[in-house]
Image 1 (cartoon, helix red, strand yellow):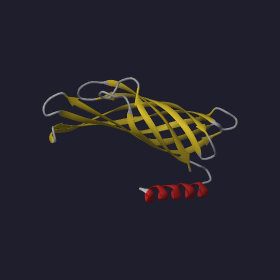
Image 2 (cartoon, rainbow, N blue to C red):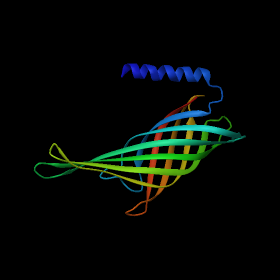
Image 3 (tube, helix red, strand yellow):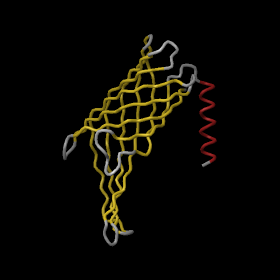
Image 4 (cartoon, rainbow, N blue to C red):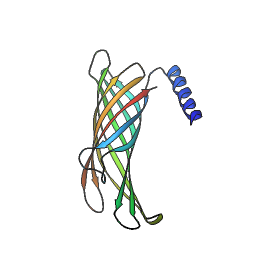
Length: 187
């Protein structure tokens, strides 16, 4: 683990020394659902994002991004032996975005995006120690995204965003909302 952290630190230092335009950025965030909870909890585990800015127009930047968000919940049934179901929700979200600089000092940015969401629900059910069920379902749908970023330095920033996801699936159509709060690094 220490070697991996050292390697990540070395790569970030190298990229910050080499990059001139800072067209790329990576983000890590904490997600939680706000419209529909996933299982018994609305708290996510982690979200990761990668952005590439391919066009600049005065105060506007246009780009493409890919976000991945993971939720995990455990359900328990009061039985003997206990029945436990682990549910994992995974969201993959490619999208195009526009970034608008709101302040002259380039600290505050408004970000809006439009893309598609691929959503997987994986369920594993255990009766005691024995696995009695395993299923995975996929849904997909339109994703609209709004957010703000605050540049802390030339490379580091804090970000918050709201994703509204309109899913279509075999069982029903539904709308999900995810808020993400995190930090990022531009390179």
